[in-house]
Image (cartoon, rainbow, N blue to C red; front, top):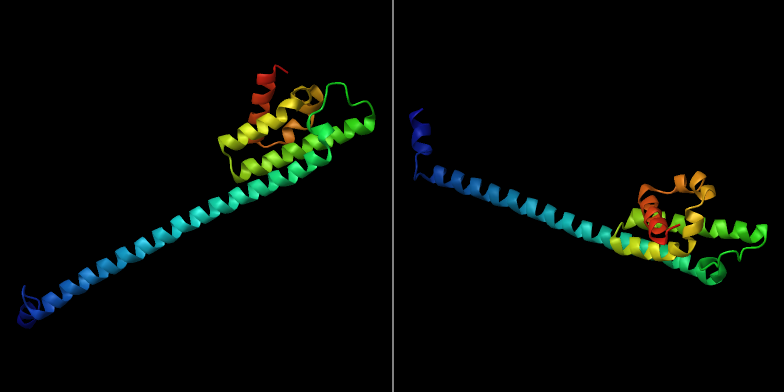
Length: 157
């Protein structure tokens, strides 16, 4: 036992070596934690960028649809005269809502809510109708339902 006391006495070479190893281990662990944190931050930034790109792609697809059917994107009240036009209109609004659901799932920002609200505003009377409330409203995500509620309240529909 006397030998161990001498080998581990403060100032002995073994004591100094053990102290250095302890500090080296602590520095190594701290560096590993820092590396993991840097990786996590980078991954979070990459994921956010990827989600933003996917949201913009979804919106671009819907804008293509709006260009193909501008009469449905900005409908005039009473301008839908045939059952086929009414069906096309319902499908167009359903596509807009599905796009909105996808966008808000990817990037639920106030900017996207405002953009979706502006594009839903021309459809406020349909969105407030009993027909839509009975079928289409329940298919929307809670985030999209909030946007619809905001639009229908602000339009007085």
